[in-house]
Image (cartoon, rainbow, N blue to C red; front, side, top):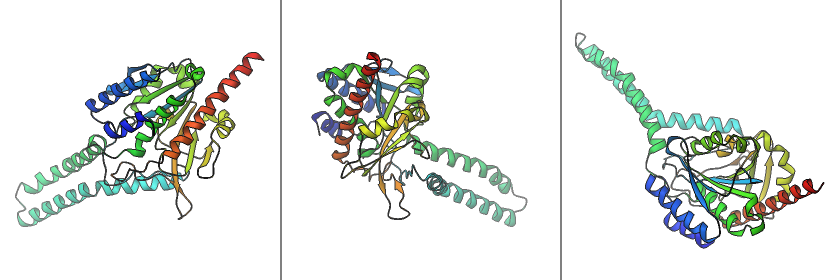
Length: 329
């Protein structure tokens, strides 16, 4: 692990508050300057601040990752990108579990109202309780959503998404000088609040949204199966991606053009590619991502970062060679 990434883990693993985000952006901008890069901040919707390195409008490929930190939750965000029905089922079960306390409170209030009605039919208590029940349930539901989005920060973010951030840094450190004006990097803000940073950037830069190949690294350090989920516009790059990111003895690369859903920042871009490391379950042979959004998000396989860095350097070289061939022809 390079010195910048070591310091990110040591001092900037949590990036949730405005102060923490500012400190991270300032630190990273200063350190990238020593590598010969210049970073700038671009404001987006709802206070988002994306950190831009290079010229996305003129780049042949854009590498991205989100740098914000999610709240810590009692249940992991369990994602099965190639088994969408299982993913939907888990989300429904998770929602039910989260709402159980609110539902139980509502049932308790209804029970209290029923007891009050039987014991004192002429009392105002039953009417008051009947009016309070929907209010309490709605407040409980809203409070739960607020806690899920704005609750205390998860202090363990090795995979989500310090792994994506450190991948970008590693690529930048190893990028040959002759290719640096052909690539750009974006650290998106507020992905955890609903892809806000990437969506606002795409809206502000429609040519980038439509035309640029964008590789988004999100949760890439916990798993031996490296998924590349291609948006429709990126399907023409499938063979190029397979040659740039081949399978190895320890990492299985899976470039998927359809039948896959991975919720991350690439969805704001027509030619977006979402990259994630997955584990394979012995039960039903399902590829899955887990542990994120919890205190168990501590797995960081440096081998994965090195693999993605090497593949990204090959991709840039192949894109530049392809561009040269097209010009000469």
